Length: 121
Image (tube, rainbow, N blue to C red; front, side):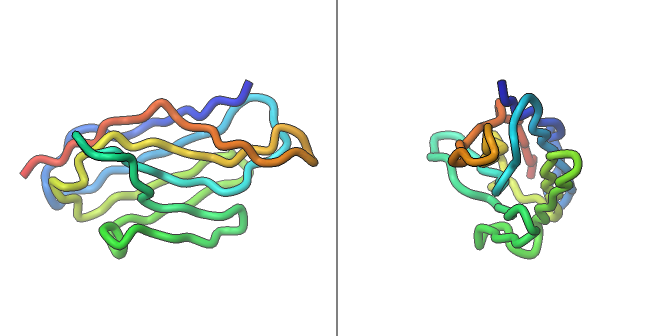
């Protein structure tokens, strides 16, 4: 069974930094794209940043220049470094990974359990 285990998050003052990590565990063949999403209170889930298996990244306009996504393929782990945090970054952050359960199977999206990030003004 594939699982995504997140760590990090918490409470920080505006202007501060936090780091998140997410590791894919279980039995699988490979991990394709990995990403971080967030869901602010009362809002829909939105893409924050994504990274392909070979390191190509993309960011939401709202976090460009402040957040950095990276991954370690040997550890099946994706990271999100969040700098210059703003109160509007407050949300539950979810890890997402496209996982191939077998070598020739289609990738299937898995989600982490979510971790709360709260930025105080």
